[in-house]
Length: 493
Image 1 (spheres, rainbow, N blue to C red):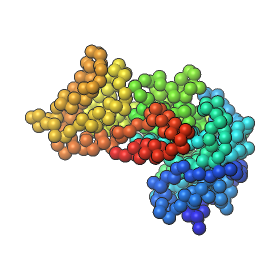
Image 2 (image 1 turned 90 degrees about the vertical axis):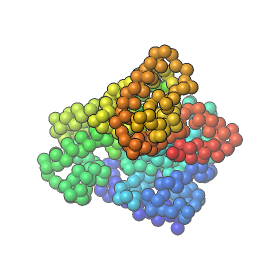
Image 3 (image 1 turned 135 degrees about the vertical axis):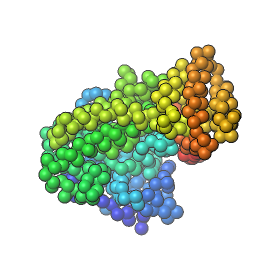
Image 4 (image 1 turned 30 degrees about the vertical axis):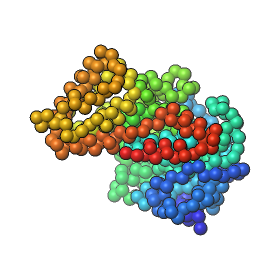
């Protein structure tokens, strides 16, 4: 038997939520099925041995979509570039199934490029092969950088010729399976507000809490049906805790993007998961030089979702989510929860940046002064953002001691950079603050600095040039080895 078909899929959405939240759909039939990517790292999490799963098993389950389960296109709306759009929903994908991992968590297997649904509008419901390649690479790069992200389980080329305005056409087609905690979006709630169904908002909210935020419940083990039947006034405290927790998770995710130098590019509310996972990678990009105005989406003409605007965009999305939640949650609780976003984001961002410098927060470190000094240098010098951290990782040596203190000047970080006098002065200011932080550490703690530098700063960063180089080999020569090699480089320490 195909191991994927033998998984214990959970019909949670169908049986517990009901058909107000989805439409049953059929997968498209494709003229060709070639497995281009299988993520063997994920298989143990759902109890499978990669040695016992063949390429044909992947193709049968996630290319031909052999299944005895209903395939569900989820319904949602969303704010797109600030404008509400009620004509959304899963337009080129569906929920293939939900399965518990060996960690006890429920995971979704959701498709992208699997054909038309009732929400496809005039589109073809397909995914370009290049789009699939880009998403696989983004997910693996972000996972290595410690970002809470979806991953790609498989990518199957499907043999169709597609026409796109943003790619040389005709271009090749593919279908991808995304692996993440939940495909429930902010926009799933916003649709219910749009149609005026407070009862469905409450039901979905109860399900989300019982499924993904069960640690907020008494004894952590109240099943959905039992929790849903509790008196609404009793649930208010848990609702307030949920929203605060969501605000916290989104603030942390945003800090992860910012410290990684990542621009998601399309932070519409339909691209925000209720579990605060990063997903759906279209025109994303990693900054090269530190540029707060960097905008990776060519169609984002006014920079709404530029790199520096991501915290504000995510906070705005949380504010828009309040409209449906106000149907069941006290407004004062929602406002109090959202008020914590700025402080939480700043704390998470400073901690993430400290980690990239090999440090942890302590009484002897002024994280704000250290990070502000670094950002000023990066902005003025316009050196490569990622190269700074890579050089720090490579030049750091726990044996560089002078009178028992590490001398930061001996690192010679940036010796090959062509810096102006102003940039050199800013670099020296940062060195001084960094040195002061290190002098308070003993030799054991200094060694941990080096370990953190390796963990937090991979040697390979996913640049646009690398993506295009890989794609050129695929598109012109059907040569996939550079793609596989790049993934291994992105994953490496």
